[in-house]
Amino acid sequence: MKTLGQCDYSAQETMHHLMSLKLVSSSFKLVPISLNGSRIIKDYTTDGEYATNDSLLDTYSKSEKYPHTIPNIMTLNFIDFVKKYKVANNKLTSQSKNMVPGIYPVFSSNVNGQNFGLYCKYQLFRYKPWQTTQDNV
Image: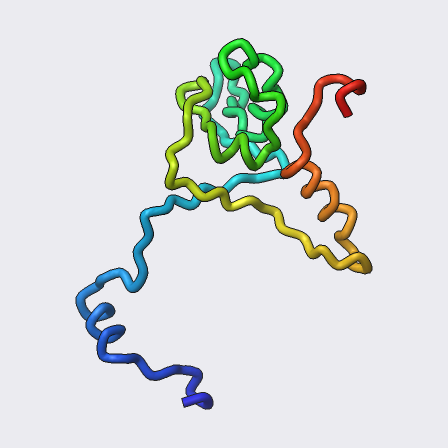
């Protein structure tokens, strides 16, 4: 079997394949979250320019405009922010409880690796609350 590159299927797996059933199901929803600032292209504007929606990273970076509606928002790190809130219709709303963030890009934590600097940068993005003044560092 190794020379053919295939493996044996159990009776249950065979029946799932024949009946087009899922082998695995989950009640959690994986939401991809980009740390590199990518945006979703919405449509063209009247000027022929591309219009984009803010990503969750953009919304988090502008969180200083939400303290009157969400008092503790400035103490949240990006991961906690993503788990609690989402943007719907250009408004910040509560996130569903069954959401799991899939954060990318992922870099190696190897100190001698070529992307260790990016690993450190993205860990700070994830886990250190962003501050608006130098006094709050």
